[in-house]
Image (tube, rainbow, N blue to C red):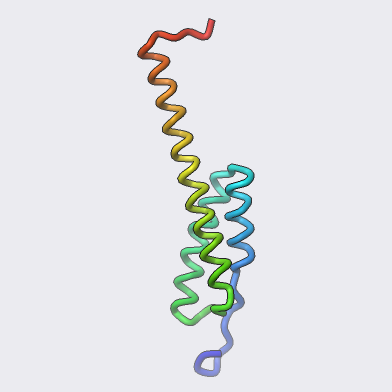
Amino acid sequence: MTNGTSLRPHRGNIVLILGILGILCTCLPLGIVAWVLGHQELKDIDAGQVDPSGRGAVQAGRILGIVSVVIWVLAGLVGVGLVVVGLITGAHLD
């Protein structure tokens, strides 16, 4: 409690589950949601609006969301690179 007001319950479990699913299912939208929701939740925890007991789960879920997005970006760059190499070398799908 802060100043006699109750704190909003943390959403650490939700952020963590979204981050895990973003990695395991390689689902870009889930990774982005985990990243954004985790970032906002940490800001609210720091502002004293949210129960700080979920900080660890929120941080872990946010990090997993970031990793999920990075994996997607790297996979996309590799895919584009392969297409470019294929076009340059004249490879055909015959």
